[in-house]
Length: 352
Image (cartoon, rainbow, N blue to C red):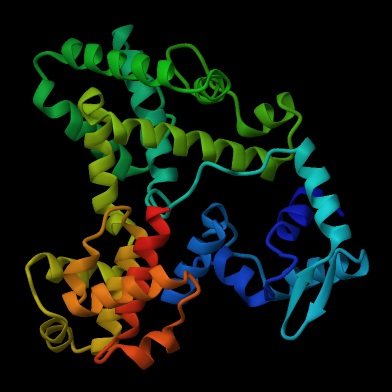
């Protein structure tokens, strides 16, 4: 195949025992935002593929799967496919020699990863030129929203930009010291500064002998590592966190536009019924929004949305067996809603 990496990456989605369908993979790549898809991504650790290929067509994915079938790496099972032993072996062999994404374990930074990198590149260039007292240069990132964020960051320091420069230098020194050495090199080599042009991803992928898609996954993992360091050490990254805060706001904290409207009303203490009435949507739609918030946010108040007696009974059911199904729960718990079941299931998944 022209792109062997994509071929084997798609193969990695299949399992020896659990059937996976073409539609499921396509919905992951297209970032379909339904509770069932969020659950599927969470339980299979497919976060790295969420929103990967918005332009991928069903026809193109079908051709890849057909080639996997022809190679006897997959077999058809019902409406989907199972991985064969042969497929498992070749997939493991391939990724023993190639990079496989492993650091993206949540939806938290899905929407801010790319804009954060753009802002970070621009800030690095601005501070580099400032250190040489040069204000005549072409910005590496021209998007007005990123330039506005930089302008707002500088606004309180107009009379003492050198102080801001000092803060920025300390933050970056701390970040690079915390990062894996190879990751730090990849990040630094792409940055542009005074009389220095950063390398392109194509140049770096060739240096690391990776395909374009393989390097893209590698770099996304590096950004994820950097973002986690910045979030975990907030007091050491006031400038980076200020930028990150604005980007989270601009991207609705990783939520869809409609779910974000529901989130704002929940923050004001509105009930499900009140939100449904105010927004002229179904109560079940509000419940789906709550599930989306729970999946996207790493920290979520599960108990706040479940009656205490139902919450306790659900945990008792799961304690007796982790394969405790919704149907079994329905048979033993009065006034149970699917949202209650899924929230407790998610809470337990994240506590493991």
